[in-house]
Structures are given as C-alpha cells and as structure tokens.
Length: 117
Image 1 (cartoon, rainbow, N blue to C red):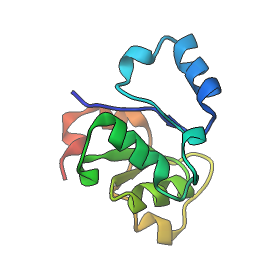
Image 2: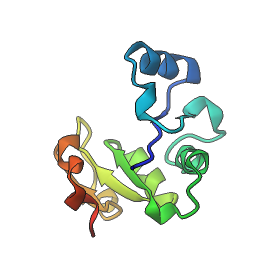
Image 3: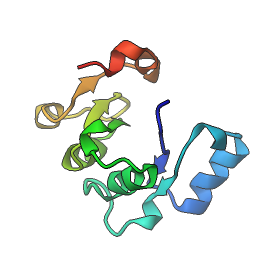
Image 4: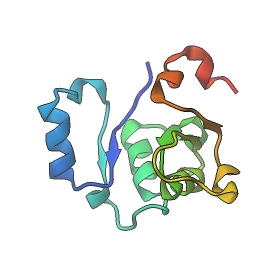
C-alpha cells in the first residue's frame, strides 16, 4: 500500500472541504495543509509535515508529484524524489536537474514499474 497525503497550499478548511465533498477522504492516510506550516514552498516544510504525519522516517522513500518549480524545489530540499508533472508553467534547466522523473500525466505513475529506479 502506498501511503499518501494530499498536501495543499490552500487553507485547511477549503482543501478539506473539497476532499470531503468529492468523497476522497478514504484514499488518503494523512493530510497536510499550507496553513499549518510557517514557510511555504519552495521551503520543504509542507512535505516534511506530510512525511511526519505518515510516520515515514526516511525522506528518500517519499515521491512527490508536482507541477510547479517552487514545489519541485521544496520536494528536493526535503530530500524526497520530485516527479515533474508539467502543467502550464515551464521549469528551467536548473529546476529540471532536481527532478527524479518527468511524466506527462499521473496515469504514468499507476504502474509498479514507475517506482523502480
């Protein structure tokens, strides 16, 4: 089983409201919200909070799916494996060097082979 927290830079109430409204709470093991950390991305705080809430002690065991340069920096700074899922914002070659893998959609991560090095 993959333990996964949704982490959101939204406040707890609006992000949690979306999760419950869409009946997605059973898919997640823990929650982490931007309003619960002192420093936002590109600081790693939100990812470290999510890791701690999952009870994971080794950051390198964590995979982070991100579309933003700040999020990719934050995941890397947390010692996690950043996966770039491109959206509207292009990342610079400097940021791309921090990325573990790049995928075109989250569907690519739905296979066991994705998580092998």
